[in-house]
Amino acid sequence: IDENMGEVQIDFYYEDSILKVYENKQNADAIFETQIDGQVIDRVNMFQYDEEIDVLQMDQNNDSKFFAVQLKNGNAYYYIISDVNINIFKEIVQGLFFESM
Image (cartoon, rainbow, N blue to C red; front, side, top):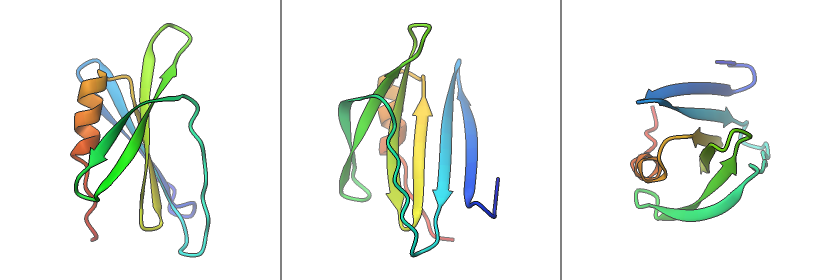
């Protein structure tokens, strides 16, 4: 966790896969734009926020595939990346919600 930069990366293990969650929290007046390499293969409905987000697929050198989504909540940006099965990945993403503390 880097409090000065407003960044954190958390790794979760699911069976033989890793789910990485990267958060970048910006000042209220900052602009943060990035683009993840990959191609859009699906869209996921996040019913809690009445929003659809793109699911991207990225191919690795060893024939494995990674899936990724980008989310924004307030001034925080989230990137979720994993090599878990695509259906499980979409279920995880659909179940995400943000709670103000």
